[in-house]
Every structure is written in structure tokens, then in C-alpha cells.
Length: 279
Image 1 (spheres, rainbow, N blue to C red):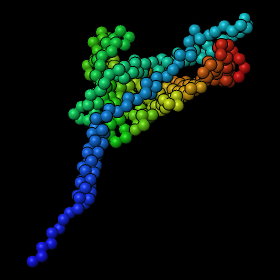
Image 2 (spheres, rainbow, N blue to C red; image 1 turned 90 degrees about the vertical axis):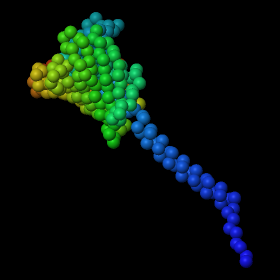
Image 3 (cartoon, rainbow, N blue to C red; image 1 turned 180 degrees about the vertical axis):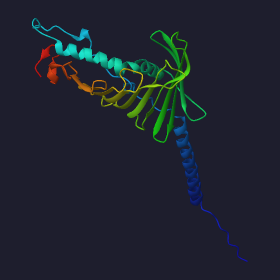
């Protein structure tokens, strides 16, 4: 009887082996992608999401030009006074929290069992030693942030107090912050809220900051800050007076102010030496 013997060619064996290796490789790639999602810490939001650069507005900014004998500085001086009010009403509340947040960049986070990331560190700010625990947890396209602090400060000692919390979007260019009053650690009294958009590569920032502390004399005040590489502006709503102040300046320090009750509410300008000039 004739027996038929089926023989598999070497080429067929090679093809099958390659297909098997490819299937295994695909599986490993998928596992690697999953691991990457789990083991990669979220990017910290930019420091500019909490800060407003008001360095232009100080009395030392007044300069003497060669022809300054008859010069006046009323417009810039008025702007400096207004910015001091804005700082007290809005900006100052986030200054120390922003400094603490910036310090987190010096430390490596650790992955937690719940999938969140924890930055643990200690830093001294204004003679007060803070022990900080910053957590970030990404869910879909949003990362949720929480900064808890402990300190043995004489006036306001706290333990694991949530000083602020916030969110950042998938591209890390937009988000929110909400700050709480450390003077009332047993209550979660909000003081300030920020909606932010910061594009570092384009050097652009837009912040809307609101005083939400119902116990504050500045309750309801809102600051809108816009900055680019070339210029910046402040638009401040004084809730108690029902007024809006507009202050603009450029990279050279040339600027203007427009507020009710000053120069009949008309725009008033200054030059690079902070001297009054026509707009």
C-alpha cells in the first residue's frame, strides 16, 4: 500500500514562528502601554497657574530721565497704589501656597496603592517650616490635585490641613485652584478661587482670581490677569464700590491706568521712565 507522507516545508515553519513571535510581541506592547499609563506621574501644573507678576509696580520703578526736571509721575504712582489694593484683596492669598507648590518640583513623587502620586517634602517659607503632601490623581483627561500641610507655627499650627486643591487638563494648559483658610483648620473656609490658562511655550497666561471669603472686606472682588511676552493687563472688579479698574503695561514699562474717579475716568498714561505722558 502506498503511504502518503505529509511534510511541512521549512518556509512554512519559519512563517508560523514569525507570526507567533509577532502575536507575543503585540501582547507585550499592550502590557507595556498599560504599565506606562500606571507608572508615569502627572505633570505638575505650571507655577504661573497661581502667580501674577506685579513686579513693575513699585516706587523704586520710578526713573529719572535726562529731561526730568519738570516731569510728574502721578499716573504711575496712582497705579502703584491701586496694585497694592489688588495685592491685598486678591493676590497675596496665593503667594505662600504658590511658593510651596514650586518647591514640589525638586522632589520625586511616589506611586500610591490607589493610583495617585504623592510628593512628600518639607520646606521653610517666611520662617515657617511646612511638611507638605501633594497628591495628584488622574481620571480620564483630568488630574485632581490636593496639597495637605502640617506645621507647628505658633499662631496657626495644623496637621494634614488641605490648604488647596485643584485640577489640570490633559494638556496641562488649563485648570482650577481653590484655597482654604489655615486660620480655621476645623472648617473648610474657601478664600480664593482661580481659573487658569497658561501656555509656557507661547509665554501666555490668563488667570481669573476671585475672593470667595465671605468674612473678608474684599469678598466678591475679581481680578482678570492677561500676560504675554510683550505686554500684560489687569482688570479688577471692586465689588464693594461697583467699579472696574483697568491697568496695562508693556515689556518696556510703558503703561496706562483707567479707573473711575481719576482723571475723570479717562485713560492716563506713563512712559518707560514712569513719567506722565499723553495717551
